Image (tube, rainbow, N blue to C red; front, side, top):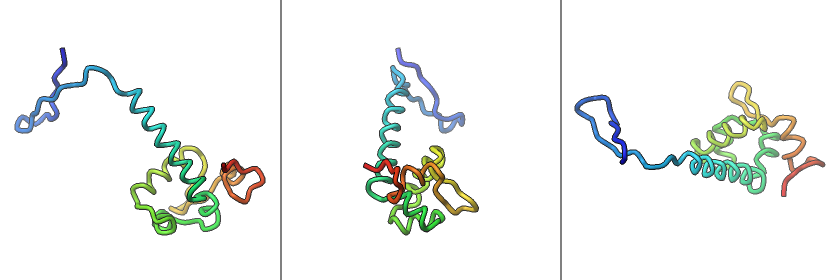
Length: 114
């Protein structure tokens, strides 16, 4: 039997919703992992993102303009690359880290770019 939950604590806005029978967490993690991998592949293979950020040291607006991508997508990308230790930020200006410089710049002898 499915459980019922209320979507609001406010009496006027109480709406009953059915919970799913199973937990989709593993599927959500898998989906999110695919998106994360795609973000990195796009940055490396299509945008040469790390080489360009290394050259230009841009803020978020500059990155949006330079790569012609919207701010929400850019924010997601930057958050992900920060979490991987591939970029850093100082007063809103982004630069590449030593790890990215060594392995993700097109000019590096050790680049891992496919």
